[in-house]
Image 1 (cartoon, rainbow over the protein chains, first blue to last red):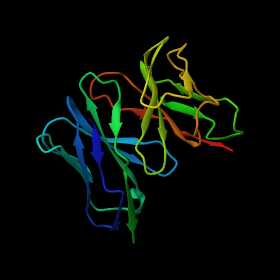
Image 2 (image 1 turned 180 degrees about the vertical axis):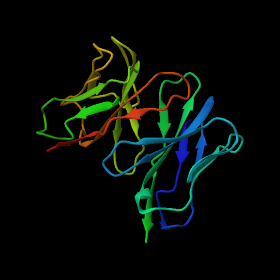
Image 3 (image 1 turned 45 degrees about the vertical axis):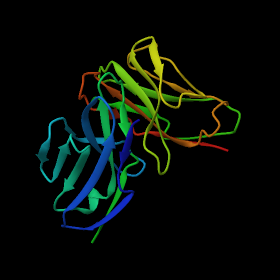
Amino acid sequence: GQNIDQPTEMTATEGAIVQINCTYQTSGFNGLFWYQQHAGEAPTFLSYNVLDGLEEKGRFSSFLSRSKGYSYLLLKELQMKDSASYLCAFDQTGANNLFFGTGTRLTVIP
Amino acid sequence: DGGITQSPKYLFRKEGQNVTLSCEQNLNHDAMYWYRQDPGQGLRLIYYSQIVNDFQKGDIAEGYSVSREKKESFPLTVTSAQKNPTAFYLCASSNKQSASPLHFGNGTRLTVT
């Protein structure tokens, strides 16, 4: 079957670093997406990992380990505007859509 | 600017009425999708379409219908057969290539009473 696990909620302090973990189980795995979604708004694309390792994009980095079925999103120098839900999703070989986790709601406090 | 437009943002209906949610994109994407988002649950796929005049059921298609008469448009009808229609509905599109990210509209929050 297919499954994605993410923590439901996290809280972190402005200026700090936070790591949001995602574990998944599926067959025919292609790659893993991370999306950011502010309350009541559209999810926006953050990153896509296919190969093992860390990919950095400014303050945001995403890591993938295919053998462990594990990914994380790392947010550095947290800002108040980073308060949002972060959705982990994978795509599969031959499938026509993404499978989403429930999302992690991150609250950044002063 | 290219993007996806969903309308309206908020929609209220009485139980037993059908309602149609609009989704239009000018990104020239072939594939379009409808997702439903409920509190504490991931996005769940309702229907998707990879080409004009063709569409496929997703994981939770019961009580919904769609059409794809034009590449730009993929309206979703929530019928009276949908048992729990109150939710946040998201439309998305992509260019269908592997690793192509989904582009989402801003969503329609439907409340049925």
